[in-house]
Image (cartoon, rainbow over all chains, first blue to last red; front, side, top):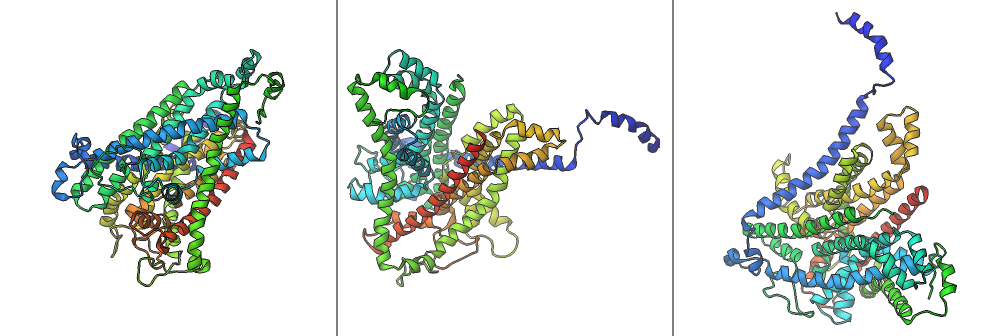
Length: 303
Length: 315
């Protein structure tokens, strides 16, 4: 039955071979494998994050920010993470104050002022790229040995913000450089032609269109700083602090450290509380990252 | 002040403007240099902070014993400072992470760069970047309380993974570095010029042949750089191994089902406790930190060189 039908179809198939795609089994399998890789990576992560939300659901209420942390099981129902939230605000606020101006200025120097042919400028560039890859806990050791002990700043809000600023500085610098580089040379030339000085050109012509790029980089940097726990552990940040920081020299705790503290307790009530605090931390970090990515995609100017 | 840009005729402008330089310009110039020097000061600070106590440590413990010793018992009565148990822990957890992250990361990158539609790509690439920002303490938490119970429940055979173990820490770390590897590899693959792909299609290559024999080889230095960066992040990662990996290490142990301490976990554990400043235990933190810094420094330098190479070719 089918044999004559096949022979009858043959010439037609040959006609079609130029237009019809030849699907090979290998190709299909390869594509499926790639899609699986992608899906596994995302599905596992999504499932895990969802699990955290479910786990912490019962504790996701106002107690989280109205109550102080506690290490006593008898008081677990009245426990929250208030001191960690205020601590995070203090530390990250100061970090922003330190790292954004420094990072933007360093980037302006590298892009607009530095002569790239000089060895010291190339060294500077290489140094920044390398710092971006130094493990965060090593920054903690820098803070411990130099800032906390040698400079005598101790285990305080100010030490934590300095260390976190240095840690995320490369992120701000690299993002700002890219934003500045995207502004075309012709804008600068026009500004010079009108008699503007170097700084007038940079501050009035180059920086304004670079602001969305700088904002993106700064937000990404700060959201990384918010989630960082390792360097602060080395810097003597402890969980279960029952007061809000009241100044630069105050002791403190931050969200990831308090979460780490709750994880260290074995009772399931603490695990739930840790999960609720993680949901809060994730909400802050993911919201900041979304804003950053949105800003970049929305205001990215094409010249 | 080096007031010249290497690009464009800005250098020519300088001679016109010389003589009427405002004082503001000079102040700004100094401020900019100071800001740029902060990063140099950071590196110098890190080296100083690590090297000085490490040298003192090596006065008490010979550097050969430190690097080749197989027993790490700083808290025992019989103290021994051989770093190999910690190094083995770090290597184990990094290898497990890579076994997961390399195929998933590179596979996702090829999918995004070569197969996904433009719409899917513009939607998925930001999600990738978003996921790269999940704090590591979160991965530690899910490894310990979500993944490990599953592992323990379905483990075939006798003694399964313990409450904390390097296998689950490695899996979580692998999932953590997938977005990093995928994002950087995808950048490298997107930078491969279209003419190369078109040439291959003109020679009757299939899509898979183009991806595996043209795009991946052309982007290989970027892909390797992404993997090396992933390795360096895995080695330096602290919270996952501290929470889920375990804090017991005295002898070299190659079984990832056990709780094994890594270099970073040791630093975190010891420096968060109340150790007297100046004691040998305190100094050992800096010695291990120095080793960690040197290893990641070499890996990063290698990765930076590779990225430069792929930029030189196609940009």
